Image (cartoon, rainbow, N blue to C red; front, side, top):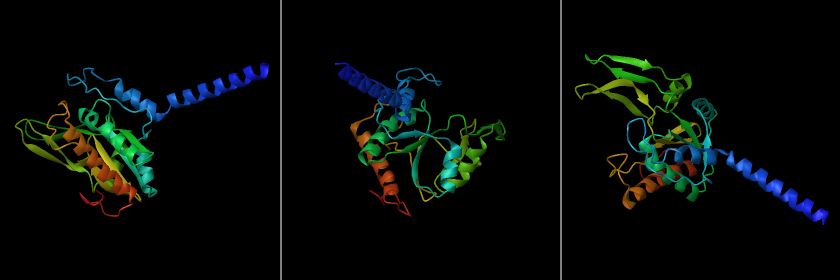
Length: 232
């Protein structure tokens, strides 16, 4: 009897240890981080979209310096740049994780870019001023990802677009890196979605799914050249 009780106790301890480990995993941490903002007012005075994240997702927390190192070491991987309050991110992230699961992609590196980027403002005479400098690793990423990144432009007070003459990592940016080279950038945002807070139709979600599937398959097939329809 004592042996049976001891055996059951050991099983209980093992299961508890396994559960605690999983609760501290990046996947669960990501779920808690994003779902904790559901239906809450954000810094823009808008209500965050309610989303549901599978606790068995492929997210691995990373930072700019690790991504730089991986690219310099010619690694192949997927990286998602965003942040939890970003309304566009919240529109597409659940679908991104669904695609990763369907394609059996075990790891998507996640870099929170909210506080690592520089900030440039435009004055009354269209003069530009850097109000916040980005981190050193962020500027290194701009160079390494230059071929896929969008230009960083700012709207002046009269509505004109002012070019800052540098690139920008926007949110969301999901980038496929093959052998250390950035091959494809995808936001996943449906062309029919004109507002980050609008209700997502089945058609929009399907478009987002197909966009991410195309982009992630590009990495899986280790393509040297990724065009809009090359991996679809």
